[in-house]
Image 1 (tube, rainbow, N blue to C red):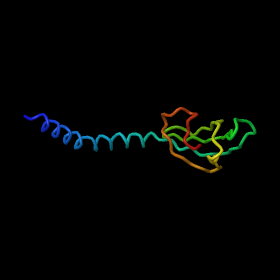
Image 2: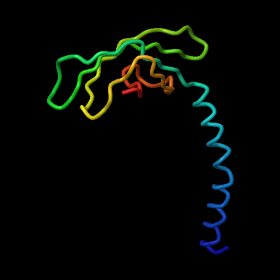
Image 3: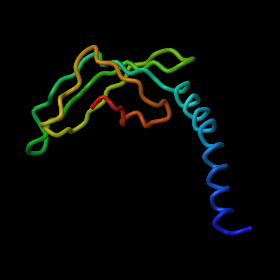
Image 4: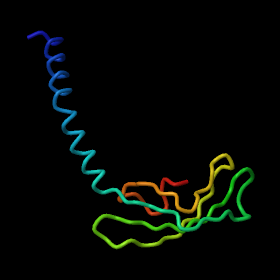
Length: 103
């Protein structure tokens, strides 16, 4: 068999098999997502030039566990809006606690 035909067949099989596998992985990720809600946030008067230091208290709700509160302090660029009370975001539960995608 010609190497070009083998390559075309392999790519076709790969494309047929990949979408169901990706869908299963995506469903697994969505099942392990946590809901993060901002309870309180404030801008602190410290930080580098053209940046804001933001302190936020977050309520993290993971599936199958009781919700818990955590406080995050992060330096963000001045162009980025700070998190607002009541703002909600879904993030992966396997992320490090300080890497929430809210800000």
